[in-house]
Image 1: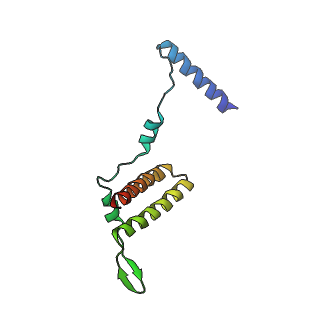
Image 2: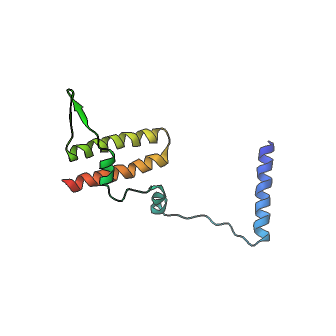
Image 3: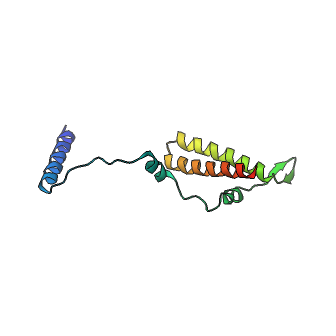
Length: 114
């Protein structure tokens, strides 16, 4: 009960302060685009850097062979999608947004290679 009383007192204090100083509270209006742009993390300068960062050798029957560039991009897209979904399930939305941007950059890279 005391917490509710304290909150009411804080609101009253804020209202009194606003009136004394001529402050009119205003709602913050933001477009969806500006909100979404806040979630975009810094992307690599060139989406191909994502490909080089994720380059791995694939092992088959004890011999090592490298995948084609398109195959590596497809594998990275799949790994990134899974990581993005996992982050979203764990409520790590900023990480999911970063992975979404990486996922889209890889998809664009794949499309440009076709």
